Image (cartoon, rainbow, N blue to C red; front, side, top):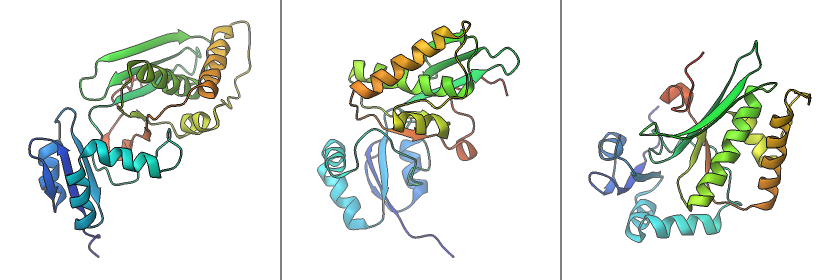
Length: 213
């Protein structure tokens, strides 16, 4: 059975407008840095969103949405938002050395890279990477979203607290200092940054991946 028809708005792309098929929309936004686009269920809704402009549409959505901060990919975005920050972590399961980083999704430019830290875990790194990204984007007053491939880290950020089973030792004192700082930042700061689950099955490895699998 054919899927429900969608309409695609391109606010920023090679050609802007409302398009009635994904292939035409994709041609306008694929690998176009800073592209802004979205799919809608009806032509009327798409026309309204295009006419009011991206910033006004975004403000309207934020004002009527759930508390800002966490957003799971809904399936309405067949390709990533290219102007975004991708974060990831890597942990050597033998040495327990962990590191994490954040890169621009399109250019792969490294925006931050921390570690390696001893006595940690991959989940801890994913969590710290998200919070590091949130703090950086807030400092830069940047509206771009963050992508992560870790559902666990997303849950920890949502609850503003890590739930790692790693126990504190003299060796990993620095890690627990960073975890405490991250939790404190989440409790004391508000943010509008969207944190989106990276669709690894469709898009491949997240751009911040360390390539050690």
